[in-house]
Image (cartoon, rainbow, N blue to C red; front, side):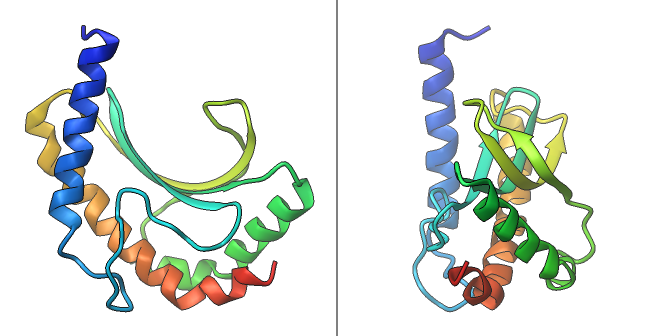
Length: 153
């Protein structure tokens, strides 16, 4: 087991490595992008990356205290699902219109998980980075094609 401080250092090292690996890759529209803290530019819509003790995941998270806005944003994602599925090349992402995040906030999420990896096993880092890289690049491409549809909500 690791202390909180040791775990924090390992996580920070992982995200630094991921950020350095992704840094030279431009966005779908050719711009520089912060892949670790991706800014969607749409209020209440976030792209979250996590590497944990037993898995890694990438998610689109809709987080707002306004349930009508959350529902409208999620519905827009559902309308864009054919484009999403095409860009993601048929991967089966989990679509959850009702979920609770780690701070007990009511959210909607679209998530894809890689199981049986650990951020605490450095030998798993290449698999985690590859998993996140591939999906983040695709997610950026999807967003560049559909973002305008979300900005008016």
